[in-house]
Figure 1 (spheres, helix red, strand yellow):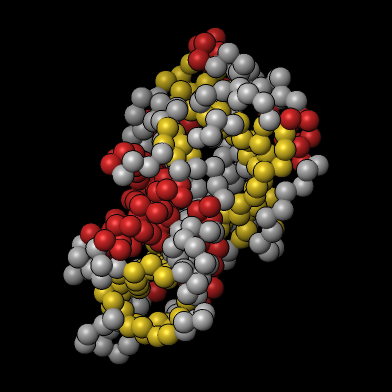
Figure 2: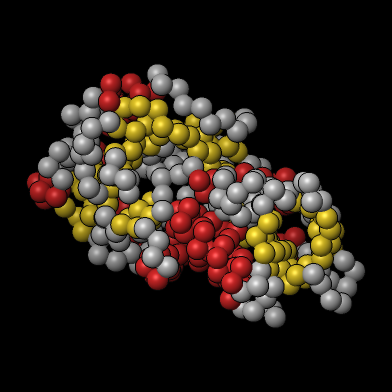
Length: 369
């Protein structure tokens, strides 16, 4: 049977586009569908744009594997495509004695995960790097950095199109049905509503991952994990940025916690926090500035609350609720759901952006050609 496309990807965020690129590199004709008017308008556009080294994630987890592999691939890609980035490094700080064992455990986990160049610093050594920092000990992670995530996604889109593929926006996925001889008919909504056939199907739909899976005929409902919206807000600092490196306290339950970055424009930004919400809500409550200032003061005593302005909010597609253990990424193939030619992604939150190229390679590698 002939198909309109060899592979169709649902979702044109960083992960979906990286999947599309990886499939294109293998000589497949690729269609990427995006419901929004532009690429990267969902989870991929509302984050810290941090390149994570791979410190925190459990031994043998997909997060550990993909973060380290993805980070190495990402730096090479950004360099070769002239996408703005900065390997600024990161300090994970202990501001009291009780936190020292926690950062020592993070250091050990990072080394197990294969993260290069990690060092345990004294407070004095940390302040030699960042004089305004309050810390009694810190981990230095030189491989951590920042990048222009939108420039990255435009470069991915360019590679897909250069290989003969198509990235179509304002094209919401409606539903798909598996064909008797293999492959799928995919129904697309929007003004240009259409149906296309595709031999392979990848769902990388972020916050809509569960809805998309439920719209694939034959996908077992009991194998679709419950999704949760983990909202985080950011505040921007007026005035000089106090640190050059990323500054992270020890993680909080379910997330890495409110951290600091000096963005590529030179301004200081703090966030995100974590609050579970029932619907997509990107408002930022100015009153949260007081809470942020109290948290930030632990590692930067000179913060002034009146210099913190509400900036933006993002929502992470979490697979765990409040107080529940944080699970791994889920890449569900035929061995899970029984549908040949389908890979469904769930829970691709942090470090999903850093991991995106490694996830793309793993997804493409699951399909025999």
